[in-house]
Length: 328
Image 1: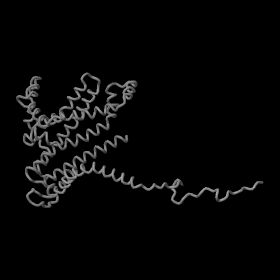
Image 2: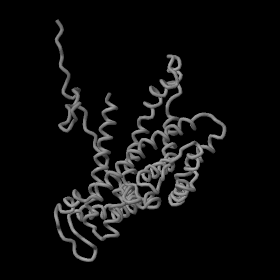
Image 3: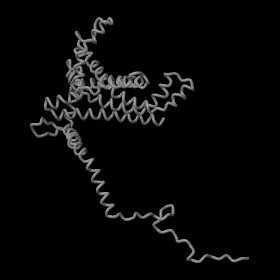
Image 4: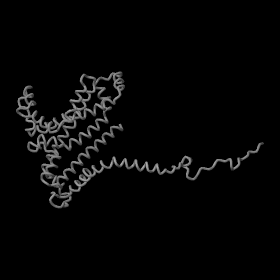
């Protein structure tokens, strides 16, 4: 029987060092950086800050500081001629009994309830039509986008002329169709807000059409071919292929439209200035009136804070719904 010989100590492998990792492999030591390498890293860092810092300083001076100050002013009384006085929740208690606030809140919700779905549907319909290979498609895409880059004042003035109750082409066309008592539009307390919504939808749908066009062109054509092979008709292809493929774009459009709708101000100021009466008074305009015209900056900031939390809540709910839809 042969004897088993043990190898000498010099032939045995070295044991793993104490600083080895969990897998038993020796930890890698980063080589020391040379002075030239350190100077390059420092130079790259300074170049990066030189790009970021001007934008950040502008954001801090013109947005972050004023917004923070507005939050603080919501709990104070200040008219810009005297020192701010701490009043606690008095501005919010006053808001509850303020009829102008309730009217403005209802009008803002009314505008958002009409503007968001109508713009969404109009933009999607335009995108689907202009996504086809039709003659002059580039011209029609440009024409649809043109209102968005047109001066808002010009848009408001032209639509005010179109909505003129007696001489406007809109009512003349309705009378031609047989409508005996056409709406008064911007001169009527009942029709002023719908007139503003129609104008706003006409102006904004071109921009969101471009987003939907980009989304439509990312849907693979193979999905539609597979649906045709399975016998799906046009509506079924739209419902089961197009809409799911546009889900990220639709979510972005809804969030942007929501924020845009709740802070509507410029179009209403030019078209109706909140009238007739208070029929088109919205929260953003009430904030402007209370703060700039009346000098009640504390109360104005309190309304702005409420508007901020309304938009924040709606946006968070939209994100939750979108995440829930992804997990299905």
